[in-house]
Amino acid sequence: VLPRRLWKALVVYCEKQQHQEAKENIDANNTTRSRSSTSFSTGQKWSQVCNHQIQLLSKALVSLPLKFHGKDTNKEEFVTAGGIQLNGIRLKTMESKIVTGLHFAGEVIDVDGVTGGFNFQNCWTTGYLAGASMADDYVKEMSRR
Picture 1 (cartoon, one colour):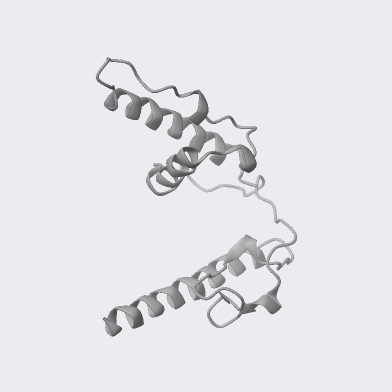
Picture 2 (cartoon, rainbow, N blue to C red):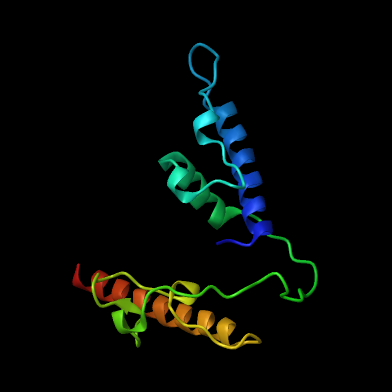
């Protein structure tokens, strides 16, 4: 579950991107493609998301400008319970024991702790381990070529 403010920002950004895309993709008859099937809503479920929406969301996640104004009190964040069990992960690399090349980090892992820093540290540390492992794998793959 994404925090409401982030999801709303992503939806607004995607809608702006769709509007821009529609302006750029006017067909020969000077009509635009229907946007109804690709419009987002803040209450939309993942099972209702089409491939085009996933592409828009992917672009938004890496290009959405997020402005920060001072420190936050972190009162809107929460820890989710459940996730990938630790016994299914190689802990030194955060790689799946089942699917080679699939790495896990942060909230997708079944780790809960006392709030006040433990969960943040878990996200940062597992993210670092997974990222470093993927970078090492990439370097190894490139050296084989």
